[in-house]
Length: 156
Image (cartoon, rainbow, N blue to C red; front, side, top):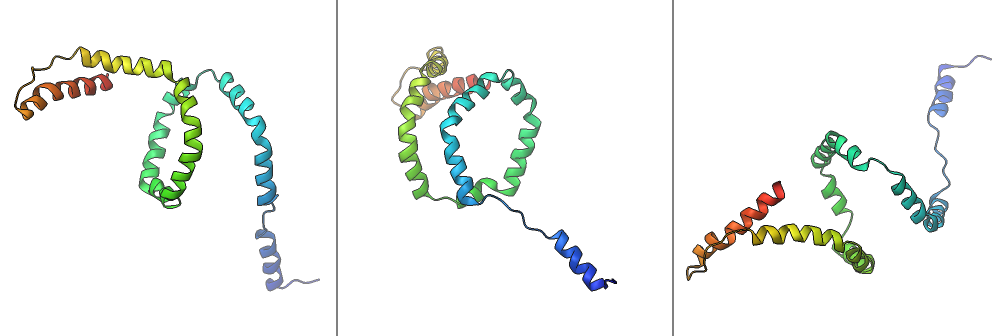
């Protein structure tokens, strides 16, 4: 049987342009929902198995910088924000954030203590001028030395 060019092209076109079959949105979402119960334990096990997270993160700095530059150039943050709304953010922050913030703060007390200790120690070690009647002199002699000390602390 002899095939014409038109038939060969039509056959090739069918072979090249196939659709991808998936389980569909409902089945995929149901599988995701079904996995939620086991995720916390798997997440914790994965975290516990990590041995060099900081080293890997530091080593990947060039990739991070490249991806951030790409994101900035593509305006990815703006595009993401445009897909959301203040109302959506408020709803999720009110429902999820308010339920999580207390336990997160409780878990971070020792880290907060360490960080605020450095800030308070820096402030207490800073010499400032006596208070005067001149508000601008107070800013120069009392506020600016503290700002500079804290700025320098963060750059160490």
